[in-house]
Structures are given as C-alpha cells and as structure tokens.
Image (cartoon, rainbow, N blue to C red; front, side):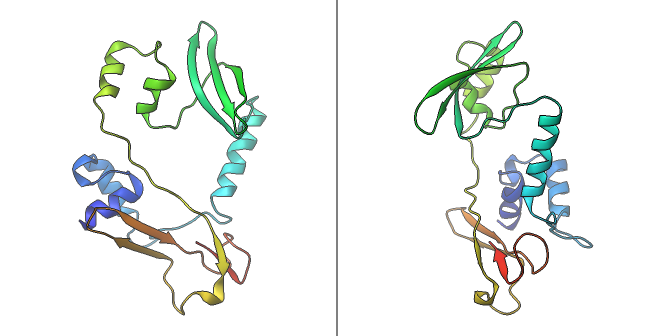
Length: 179
C-alpha cells in the first residue's frame, strides 16, 4: 500500500503497473540527501522558460482552447479546437505535441491511427490522473513545525498529497504559503 501511494504520485500507477526501473528511480527521489525539492519560484518558472523557448524558435502558444480533432496532412497537421465560448477554429502545425492520455487519440484522430496502435489503445485501461489545486494561505494559519509534504490515504486506494511551501523558497511571498 505504501509503495502504491508513493508511486502514484509520480507514475500515476500502482506498483503492479509501474516498470521496475522507473519505480526504483521514483522511490529514490524521496531519499537523502535532497529528498523532495521544488524549483525556486515554483513550476511557473519552468513554464515561462518553456514558453520563451517555444516562441524564440517560432512556436505559437494557443491558450484556453480544447483540441477536438487532429488530422494528419502531407505537410503536417490540422488542429481543430473549441474556445471557452464554444467557437471553433482550425490551425495548421508542422508538429504537434500531445500530453493527453493516449486513449484520447481514439476520439481526436478517428481516421489517422494505424490499426495496430488503435487496437493497443482500445485495450488500455481507463486513464488515471490527479486533480491538482494550487492555493495560497497566510503562513500563520499553519501549525508550528508543519512539514512540507503530507499524504493521506483511504481504503479506496485514493490519496491526498499536499505540498506546502517554505518561507523564502520562491513559491509564495514571505508570510504566505502555497498549498
């Protein structure tokens, strides 16, 4: 149970569905001398750097759009998307990076998937994942000596993992904490 909960934090899978070498690497991440650590300035710093690099190299970032269809063309891709108001638009792209669970490709690319890959996707279990919430609170509402990471589990194999910033780690202004 302990291994399942630790592995689900990183691989999104329990021990029996995590590759041994990957699982060993993941479990080592929480060990001394570094333990769990965070980027100074939070993940926003990494996101900003990725956007800067993409734009520097000619990429275009489209926000608040949900991709509804991917179609392979001889020169690249057609990407259809819907915005938050329900309006649809179409974009051309030389390359597409998809970070969705692979099972989503069955709906996004109904005609372009090779049969062998389609069969493999159809036999995958439902994707699992995490619901992530970012929040901020005054540091003085936390108990004294509050650890930086807390985890709670239930019998249903669900868990709650909390990461609480330290004063001065760049993830929240002084006197506040990110949760």
